[in-house]
Amino acid sequence: MAEFVRVEADPDHPAVAVIRLDRPKVNALNAAVTAEIAAAVRQVTEDASVRAVVLYGGEKVFVAGADIKEMVDRTAVEMREYARDLQDAITAVARIPKPVVAAITGYALGGGLELALAADFRVAGAGAGLGVPEIQLGVIPGAGGTQRLPRLIGPARAKDMIFTGRRVKADEAHQIGLVDEVVADEEVYSAAVAKVAALAKGPTVALAAAKESVDRGLETDLDTALEIERAQFASLFATQDQKVGMRSFIEEGPGQAVFGGH
Image (cartoon, rainbow, N blue to C red):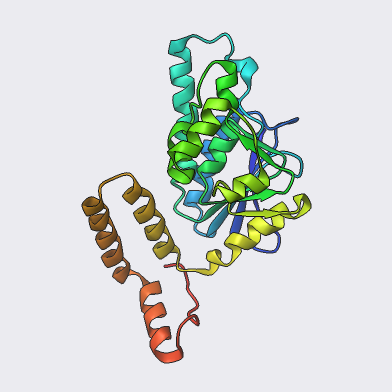
């Protein structure tokens, strides 16, 4: 049994799985939490009944950062392996072939923000604070922050956050595109579920293809990205959902298809 990370089904939307972080007091990321995140990702990826995912740290805090006490005396060689494990776990989150939303309450700092950046969407509470404060510790973000953050909000804004280590409040985070929606703190979880619940009813294979096309395309040149898109597009004509969707469009009009996820 996992000690700090568990997978739960949302009670009102059973196709939406919740990866729930629960390491008091602030969900600090250590080696155990990292390993359990990776295990949770495998679980939701392999479970065909899961069609969308919420990352949630609870009502008070998302993840306030890495466990500094665990790393303060490590050597450079030790930290290279430690960082690789954390990067691998967060990259695994980014590669979940299903829609993923981070529900951000309280703080998403350092590794916490890097975890949230691996989601497709981010919903934040009005009182949330987000940042990558590693520079204040004499280091830099090491779990994707220097790469995913500029891809999301642009290099200049990312450098401002990384160079200063300052915390960004929810309203500014929304303004610069760091989060997609800001709601009252007590509504974060429900808003996050609502954001992906409709997607959980969509064509599962096509959604996975769309996600991979966008994500992989951003990592390469346009010609290669178009090849990726073309291959994914053509492959969907082997799915039942493509037949259902197109026949429904012809017979009933747009938006009426009921997808089985096959």
